Length: 398
Ligand SMILES: *Cc1c(COP(=O)(O)O)cnc(C)c1O
Image (cartoon, rainbow, N blue to C red):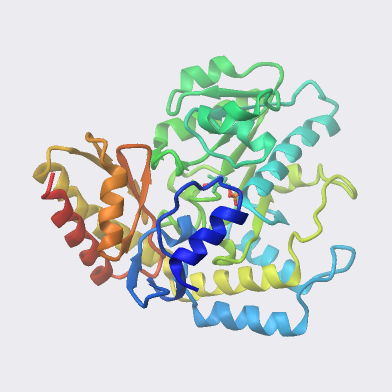
C-alpha cells in the first residue's frame, strides 16, 4: 500500500489517540537502521521508545521467536512454563530481586507493583497503609491506577475522578518527601531517571535519603525501571548507579526487544505477600513472550551490551556537550548511558525532530523544548557521529 492510503485507512478506522503521526510507515529494519516503504533508510535513535535494545531484527531474537512459535505460542499459567521459569531465574541472578512475575506491559507491571505494596501491608495486619507517594513529572503508565501515580496533569485531567491514594512530591526534595509520608503511606514509587518527561535525573544523595526514609518509616521503595532498566543507562539496572536497592522494581520496554512483556520483580519478604489467587494474567509470561525475553537477556549479557551502553553513552554525552558552548539556545545536555536529553531554551524541539527525520534520523521530542535520544544499545561511534553531525547542521540554522 502507498503511504497516503495507509494514512487514509488509519484516519478512518483507528482511534485518533496519536493525532498526526510522523508521515512514514516502516517496512523493515536491521540493527540501528529502518527502511520505509519507499526504501529510504533511517537511523533509529529512539528505538521504539527504549524498546528495541538489540536493534531491529536481531537474528538471535528473531530465531528464538520463530522457533518458539513453531513449538508452542501459548498455553496458560495453569501449567508450568519452562521459558518463564528460566527468564525469571536470569532476572533474579542478575538483580537484587528474589522473585519475578510477568505482565504484558509497563503499566501492567506497575499495577502489579502497586497491588503487591498494598497486599504486603494488608497481610501484615496494617490495612491502613495503602497510599503511594510518587514524583511530579513522573510517568508510570496509562491505566487508571498508573495515571493516578503519574505526576503529569495532561494524562490525568480527562479521567477524573482519579484512582485515590497517590500523593505527589517534587523530584530531589527529601524534605517534601519526609513531610508527605504519613500513617497511610505504604510505598514510595520512583523512576530512577524520569524518561517521558524529558530525562530528569535523581541525585545520589536524594536516592540514599529516600532509601533511608523508607527504612526508618517501614515503607516500601518501588523503582519503575520500565524505561531506564535493562542496560539503558549503562548499568543493567538503573538502581546500581546509586548503591541502593529497591524492595520492588518493574521492567518492560526493552525486555522483549519489541515483543510485549513486562516484569514485576521483588525481594522475597515482599514477594511472598502474593499467595495463590492474589494476582494473575492470561498472557503474562507465556512461552513466546519469555522466549523473546530470554533471547534479549542472553544477547545483552553475552554481547556485553551494557558495557557498550556505558561507553557509547559517555562518548555521546561528550560529543553533545560541545553544543552547550557552541549554541546559546542549547541549555543542558543530561543523561546516563544511552538515555539522553537535550534541553533547549527555544520552543523548537518538534521542528528540530522533524528536520532530523527529513535527514533520516529518528529522535524524540518532549514538550516544546527537550530532545530525547534513546538509541539501541548496539549503537556505534560512527552512528553517533552521524547524528551529532546532523544535529550540528540543523542547530546552525537557529
Ligand atoms: C513507558 C513507561 C511505562 C508504561 O509502559 P507501557 O508498556 O506503555 O504500559 C511506565 N513507566 C515508565 C517509566 C515508562 O517509561
